[in-house]
Image (cartoon, rainbow over all chains, first blue to last red; front, top):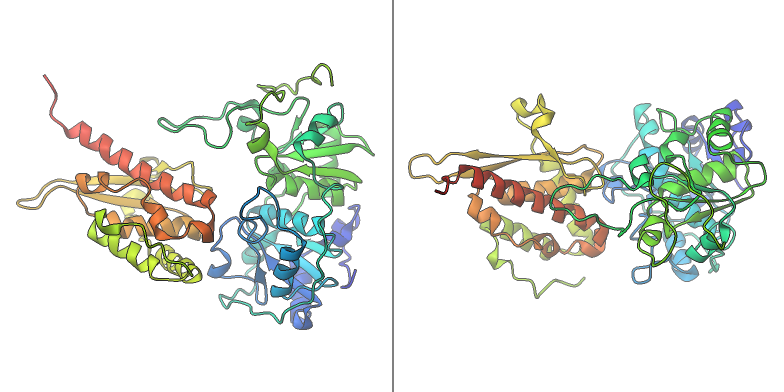
Length: 305
Length: 163
């Protein structure tokens, strides 16, 4: 870890407190000149591709989850070469401490952090509470686009296996816990259809058999920060029934909301093996002959698995 | 940057055609900047609608909350009937607001027939698909579709009963 880790009581209870920073900490670091020289790089990653332009944390660079991190042709993430070029252009070096923040309780920021982790970027953290908390606290914003000095970033091949699950992995995972982080309507398969609108994105509604329903936003407090450890334990160990040492797969529609949950399970509760199934419902709900459960019950492990 | 040379904007109402031309004359980053300006130019709701959210309809296909409604101003003397458009989208959703701004400037005050004649794929002509991704373009296409459906429905209500 190249930049000092924040010490506070809330973070200390988490398994990996070094993965979060508070708005106070970031404001002080920026004031202290941490952004000069690329030792600390602040990245904004939002759902809305233009939100950064309306005002952002001074010195922050923008990374768009879709246009920057997704491959333009194949449904996959960019490769090592493209990631190295992106990082360098944003002033990020391999040993930079990267703090990511964004809109909607860091939903997209967590997704960007997960992609950084596919490339094994060592020190990447989330700003607890994200963009909304920073703004609610009346902190500095600017519309001036940051033009960073280029970083130096090696070409690192993505290592998907530890934190990314593919459809085949999920089929082989039955019997171990799955967390569905979508809304209750999506989970049961009873999404409302507007007149004259076909359901876009998935041909079937429902959830992967045995998946527990814990909508992602339940891990976030009103101010967009992560709930404290005991609240997260009540949610995932209590309600979802996870046990220490479990091998867990989380999913949503395209893997963004589940990145937020992945972060909570991996870094805040300390599960070693947590994978995000980014194919998620847009793949599963369209795939031929995969088992699906409709309704509020989790369902059972499909026969023959 | 490439220009979209094959699209034909001539079938569009004049104001909308002008907006499409403006976008097409720009590079991709400049197009995003122009969309941001449209988001800033989207007018506030009139007071009578501000207090009545139930009069607005949500376009659920947009990733962020967008509400819209239409009103028809009756024909006045020689002037034909005009359709007025009203949008509401949060400041935190500049892309959605930008699309709404384009449709407002391009379509507000036109006749029902003119709005219904706008091709459904008109948003593609702005040349933003690559810069903001096809996923986000769906929201704009849905917005235009919703406007056209509301205009069509409102027209059929006014149509004389068939006997």
